[in-house]
Image (cartoon, rainbow, N blue to C red):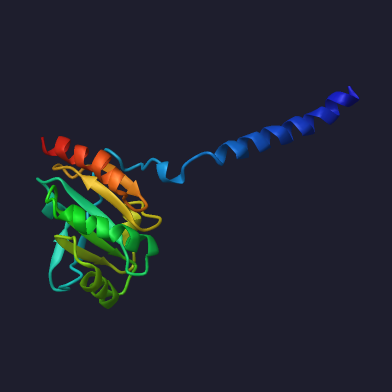
Length: 176
């Protein structure tokens, strides 16, 4: 009986260690988004390059498009950006940028320095639209279908392999 009482805390400890150890093997980029297969949140934001002009989510209804969340202060965005510039040249889908929690001038300067892959970029200075989309870090990207439904979310920067093996086939399927 005494041994059983001594064994219970040890078994609980080993169970906890096993549970936490299993978490080390999980990929944080594979966190499923609750927005997949749901309508993309509505927004109406001023363009980064022209604050007098507003772009709305509903302006994209009827076409498959990408929303890429980025910021001039984001180190991983700098890694991803050349890939987006190259990918945009394929003209597979319109790419819209969501300049997230940034300064307007810094975002404009970023695009002037590194190239502009976006059909347009909107300015989300306070991050409210990003929050609506469940963004918790940049870069993040969404593929949205013709009906305005989110079909894919990329957490972190794109790689050439992800663009080639995941995004391109999905876009072709959605445009099919």
